[in-house]
Length: 327
Image (tube, rainbow, N blue to C red; front, side, top):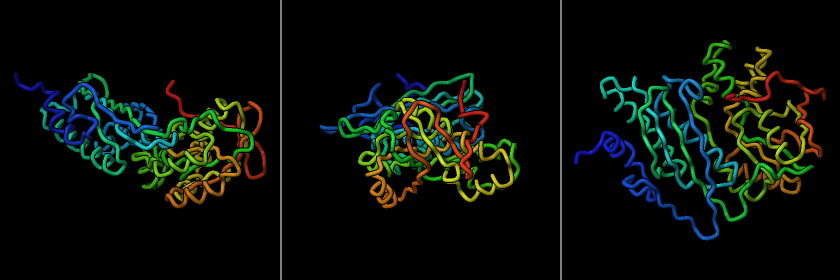
């Protein structure tokens, strides 16, 4: 019996990427061995053209973003990547002759291959379908943590110090540039929107030092509120301490609304961590050794009120929109 089009597509573009657990993508399931004393952490994110990326973005960048947003979730849990499952819905207009589809898939697979090697996260399998709607990429990623040691969102405690990795707001401002809503030059900002930088090197440090953590995907202001709410606490943040790239700082200096965009716009894929004071110096030192910049921005408070963001004078800041939301 001849191979179906889907079988041929998988064999040509994705089977070469499959790790041992993917069984060569010749089965309908993966076989994943987890060492004794470890638990799996599973996360899933779907990206849709016109919502999470631009339809004309390079295929390799779309692939990288789809995988990296999941790797960011694993990093925040202290989990080491083990593998992922890919679901790909390809729109009809992508392949009027077939050649366009082949070229697109080859570039998409190349983008995945680079990150599979970089982050040691193998393809285990998945599904590929045709759709009349926009392109959609969904990845379910698997990571491993020592039993009972996953870093939760729910563990923040009064007195903990709040840290973020990297810089905040670059991607949100890059999107505004791409949409033409803010004028100016910003190659760094555009790149940060197109290709997130997951902080997986920090995962073992979080395991040893953090009481709570999550990745910042919907905006620092809103995601901090989520983590404090589920932990049953509140927080105080000095807005001037929030780390900004030079490009973001320059943009904010010339556009009055850009600071709110930076704090609420999302797509940072940095990590927000709650660190007990006794762990702070070790956390900072080990983060530096891992090559991940971290910045203290505030502390956790008793109570269940909304977190306070204060300006340099101590006055509270209010934002029109707390975070990005699909609905």
